[in-house]
Picture: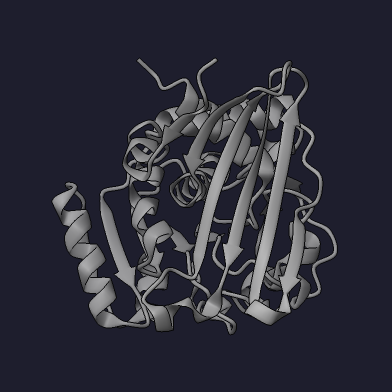
Length: 305
C-alpha cells in the first residue's frame, strides 16, 4: 500500500482556485460536518502553542490540522506559525494526503470571506479595500473577484512599503491597484473593506463607513484582538462564520455582541437573509473553522480537471 500523497505549498495553491474552493465551502456549510472545538495546548517552557483542529463528514472524509505557534521564532529567522493538514478516508481511516497547512488555511480564509460576500456585499461592489499586506491579504482580491466585479483595489498597511509591495503584485495580476496612507478616506471610498491584520486595537472606525459598505473582519481571532471599533459593529448587520466567533472574536465580545443575524451555515442554506438593501452596512466576522479546512483539503486531493 502506498503512503499518503505529500502536497507542498505550490501544489496546494495550484489545486485551490478560488471559484472551485468557494463552491466547495458552500457545499460543506450546506451539508454540515462534525467539528469539535479546536484543541489549544500552551507549551510554557517553549513559549509556544499547539493547536489541533479536527473535522469529519461521516464516512466521506476526516482530517485534522496541526498548528504550532512559536512567537520567538523571528529571532531565529523562522516563521512563527507552521501547520500541516492530514486528510484521511472517512470509511477506513487510511491516510490520503499530507497538505501544506499554511497555504490551505490562507486560501480557505479568503474564500470564506468571498463566500459570505456573495450574500452580503452589494451586487455592484467593484472597489475593494484590503487592510493588511500579509499572505492572507494578498489573496483577498482574487477571492473577491470570483464573486463580485472587483475592478479597483486599494491597499493600506501599517508599513507603507508593505502596502506598496502588495499593490504592485496585484497590478501584476491585472488589478487596478494602488497603495494608500489615508485609511479614513480609503474606507469611505470602498464598497468592500476587508481586514486581514493582527491588530489588537481597532484600525477601522464606524464614523468612516458609508451606507452600503460591506465590512469583512478576518484577521483578529482572539478575544483580546479587534480590527473594528464598537461603533462599526453596532451600526452593521452582523454575520459570522460559526458560533465560535461569539466567544473567540474580540471584535464582537468587546462590542457586547451576544447575538448575530446569521452564520455561513444559515446564509448558505437560505435560512438567513443576506443583504436586504443597497444602503445597509453589513459585517462578516470569521475566526476560522475546521469544516473549511476539511472542504479545502477535499479540493486539494481531488483537483478540478
